[in-house]
Image (tube, rainbow, N blue to C red; front, side, top):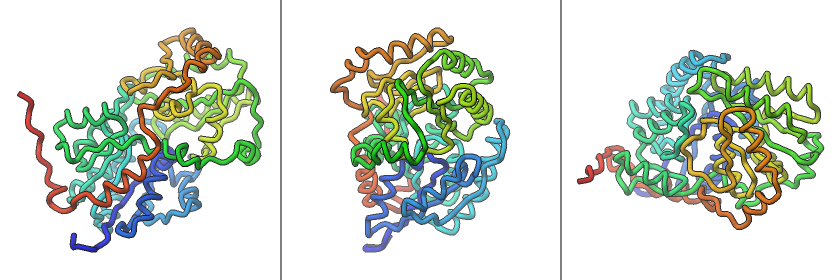
Length: 388
């Protein structure tokens, strides 16, 4: 790249979840005069079933430069596999036109394999956020590790994640510990008053209130974990607020279960799409977070919010002391919930720090991507020397 030329950075987002993590990184990149930001939107963002969240992106002031229709209306693993194939066809054309200096990807959605594969063939360097994390109960873990090895700049959330990326043979100068960018919302206090959120959602809070975020366990072939969770939910008196699951194989079965539960147990509510600011505002009011979402592991420690993590999906991730892991069986889930709702447990979390960072990841990411050397120096990777 010649001196003074703006570098083109393309960013891929597939769903409400990764967009909420990318928000402040996108804002920081958008503000840089030396960066030409290009946003590529695909997957669940373009699906009415999952809330058509591309509209939210535009309401936030971002320009969507490319839309890639790829998500099959399916609830099977075959549908997931075919979605990757459709996505790579669309992304090959998009990236072939844009030819960005850098492609930014985040986390571990399976559709990102298509983005990384197309970029690899087109000789486009990749920057990847949240490599080095571990979630052994889902295919996300393998996707994340594959993206790490296909990437040229690594932006990790924790020191442990940075060490894992280095252990995979990546050169040290490429690997940066920046924190988890989803925490930037709270650091910047970009959260509306709870009264405003409740009015918008037509919601009344009753005590105690539990946020439930449970996603398909994509490495499991049965629904025993979900059965245990829902059997426990039937025995709970608190108000339950359900978040829509990710668009993975098995998501529609979970949506049906949540809808049926809410019909039987008002005032329980199922939300197709909570924008990040509404979500954070509600989360501040919760008595408990329950489920198997990475949000429970990475974000709730900032709020000192008791969290019950159910099952295997997040196995292996770094944990703060607000996380209680529930073993198999309904009784184990109920015991973990009872412990988490005990006031003495929440009191014990005073002063706890979040191992996932301080809420300044977005500005660090923008600075790194705005200054990293481009061209052959970035594209041509060398394996780190083997230890003696």
